[in-house]
Every structure is written in structure tokens, then in C-alpha cells.
Length: 303
Length: 331
Image (cartoon, rainbow over all chains, first blue to last red; front, side, top):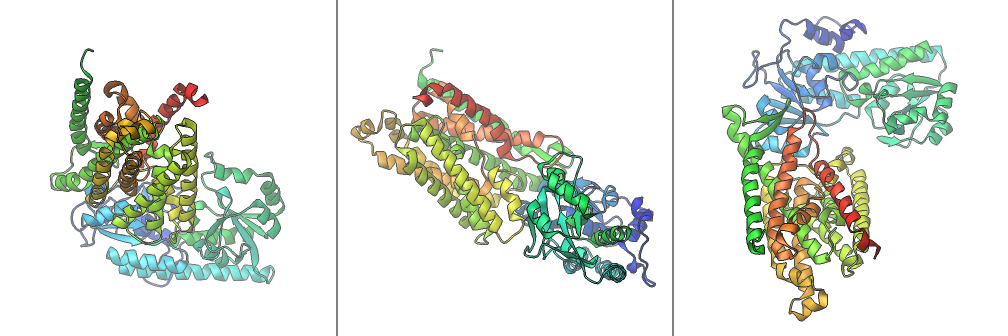
């Protein structure tokens, strides 16, 4: 499992709570019974059974739940292009998020995200299902809030607190690394612009922006608060030191991906330093999102 | 083939009713799980809930919304004396979607509130008003359809604009739902939202039936026969706005059903709108339920939108109608 071999887990003092997410995933994989839980009633540990119907909440549930607590995850969660925890997710039955499916799955708690159909949420509530609506994360603080919310809903408060603590340790070490790199190079923070498929870029109030800053980069797109589209002209004008490419399903034809072939962008990318972040690391807020900042730092150090 | 027109119509109505009697239980027994289509009601303890709270509202809404669209198509084709008239093509549905979007995304109402339906009804009323002002009185195929094209484009742009400015950053992604409707995961609350508006809407349209018959002969003749052209106009516009508006508030835009249905029926029941309304209602319900069943029969995956399936069937039909009326279009 690459998630076990890849990054060395950040082991913080004594308790098992202070493990980074890959390490937790490894423990999950090593656990005796990784099989999904049984519908109807509580799991053996007295914990409520859980189903998640949104890619982002899938990843929160996966990092928090006890083995056997998860009954089902949403259909995109096992796709490595989409999910940071695809391999762990692939062990569970997948759902397409319809009310009828969820009724059959019969989880005690259904975790839904901001893009889940309002009709489905409403119908499930009407049928007496406990639904946890999780807001999208626009910052690491939001990720912590969401972890605490989901943790409380599925009886894993301690794990949530442990993950939050581990995230802070991990973020701290990213920041320390970024500062030491900056001290070696030049004093000023280095400028960057994120280019996503379709020419979209990220603005101030996003988790992706916070991850850039954590890696010691400053977003050259100032006036934008969330997401927006970026004209290639703007990109040329701003002359960022780094262009951060976030490709998504590059092999599958889409108009959105065509922008990466634009001659102006290609020649700019040739002249300037480029960095890459996997789309799945910017798509959802989860502890593993910090991998985006780590990847940026590694690439900058190699540059 | 010597059957009298009345007997032939009775036969068509009976066949459609039988069709509905077959397709409704089919729709109630067909579900969709993670592995694709599923027959039956599942485990015994859940069967009641699945039937009463998920499949029943879905089936009822399919029948009521489809019926509304068939009826409105027949009435609008009669009123406009235009074989291409239909709530979707004329922009009545997209006007309703715009009204619903404004009410819903700016936090004025939840997805099953009467206020949402009210917004949709106002939207469809506005679209019909503009349409009639632009092209209603001219017996001119092209002008009416062009007005519809314009209203559709305007409503779609306004809907997109409203969704962009909506407080929720995810609103913009949901335009697909409003533009290509769906029956997925609706509840009985939506049925109770639809019925109190759609039933009076149908009643208004049916009340206009004789007036629509007279309008075939032209406005002056209709007036000389004692029918109020203006009265007929308001009955159809008011009724269509009420019923289509409430439908769109619940399911989003389901296009082309209202276009196809009257054309399929005219060869059997004749050209008088009064004879066409009931069969159009039944056939609209039947076609919409069949399309929704087709969606649930698809291989595993996220559910297809109902409006996509109706457009796949309806759009080629529309093109066929445009081709076959080419002579008149050039006139």
C-alpha cells in the first residue's frame, strides 16, 4: 500500500493519537477485521454505524471511524484521481447517494456534504435518518471543525482530537521547513499562481491558499476571495515566480484541460518555475490535504 | 376503421388508462440501488417505507408533472394555433425555473415550501406574458418560436446569473438540476406542494376547452360565436402558469413532453383541443413515467436527469416537425 510506504509518518510523543493520517491508514489496514460493518444497529464497539454520501465527507469518515463502523462510502471515494484515501475507501461498498440506497444501507448516521442534493437530505430527514451536514472547508481551521463535528456524530471525539493535534504537528513541521528553505534562499515570500483545469485559480479564502502560504508561497492573485477563472493574460502580467499546476484527469479529453496546451501558457511554463499539486489534494479539506503543502516544499527544495 | 370519432377517442382514453394502470405498479416496484436497477421492495421491514415514502411520491410526481406537461402542450398549441408550442420550447418552464431559483437560493424558502412554488408560478406567468405580448396574436409559426427561443435564452441567463450571485458557492453547480429536471428523492411533501396548485391549473385549462375549439376558426369567428377570446387566453395562461410553475418548482424543467404528446394523439382523437386535453394529460403521464423508468433501468452509476431522456426523445421529434412544416414556415 503506497500510503504506508510513502511519507514517513510524523510520530509525535507517546499516544497512538499523534499519528499522521498515512500511519493511521496503515493501522487500519493491519487491523484484524477491515470488513465493512453490518447494517441495523450499532457495531460491536457500541459505536453508531456510518454511511457517507459525499467525496469530502468520505475522507473525514475514513480517517475517523473505527474499523467496521463504516457501512458505505460514496462512489467517487475509491477513485485515486478524486480521493486522497482511495485505497482505504476501496474496501467498502460504494453508494450513489440515493435515499433508497441509504435506507437499505441502514446506517445510524449519514454524513453529507455541501453539494449533496437538498432533496435527498430532506427526504432522509423525513424518514428519520440522522444526517450530519458538513460544510466545505475553506481553511485548516474548517478542517479541524469538520473533524470535530463528524467525530462527535459518530462517537469518535477522541480520534478527532487526536487527528487535529496530529494536523497541527504536521502543519508546524511544514511551516518550519518552509522557513528554513526561505532563509537559505531569499528573504521575501515567493509568489505563485495556481492554474487549474479550465483556467481556474484559487483566491484568498480557500484551503488551497492557506496550503500555499504554509509552504512559504504568496498567491499573486490578490483580489479574489474564493475561486475564479484566470485569463492567461493575467498570468502573463503578474509574472509569478512559480506556476502551480493542478491537473485533473489529464488523459481524458475536456475543454478544461485544453488550457494547459495554450501556447502562451506553454511558453510561460517553459520560462518560469513550475510546481504541481494533485487535484485531489485541493478538492476536499481533510488532514491529508497537508500533503499538498509538503509536495510543494519538496518540489521547491529540488528546484 | 369505421369507428365513429367519439368511439375512437374513448378507445384511446381507455388504452392510455390501461397503460397507466400497468406502468404505475411497474414504477412502484422498480428501484435503483448501488448495483443498478432493482425489482421489488427490498427487505420486509423497509418495504413499507420504500413504497410509501420514496417510490410512491416519485411515481405520483411523474404522473402529475407529465400529465401537466401533456395538458399544457395541448392547450398552448390550441391557444397559439401553433403545432410547435410547448411549455419548454416557449420558455414557460425556464421562466418558472428562474422564479424558483431566486426564491430558493436567496434563502426565502425551502425546497418544499409553497413560496418556492409561488416564485415558479410568477416566473412562468412572466414568461407567458412576454411571449404573448411579443407573438401571441400573430398566427405566425416562426415568430412565436423565435420569441420562445429569446425567452428561454433570457431565463437561462438570468438563472445562471442568480445562481452565480447566490450565497452558496455550490448553487452554480446546481443549474443542471433546474435545466434538466429530475424526480430523484422527492417526498410526499413535494406532492402536497404540487397538487393544490396544479389541480386548479388543470381546471382553468379545461374550462377554456370550448373557447380553444372556437379559436381554431380564428379570433373573429370565435368572438362572433360568443366566445371571449380574452377570457380563453387568460384561462389558458393562468392555468398553464399555475400547473407548469408548480411542476417545475418540484422537478425542474422537463422539456418536450408537451410537444410530443398532442402530435401523437391528433391522428386518433382529431384536432379539436377539447377532445385532446384529457388524452394529452394521460399520455403525458405515461411518457414521463416511462422515461423515469428508463432512467432507473440504466447500468449502475449516478442517476441520469429526467429532462435529458425526454429531450433525447423529444428533440428529434421537434426537428421532424420543423422539417414537415417547412412549407408553412416559409410562408
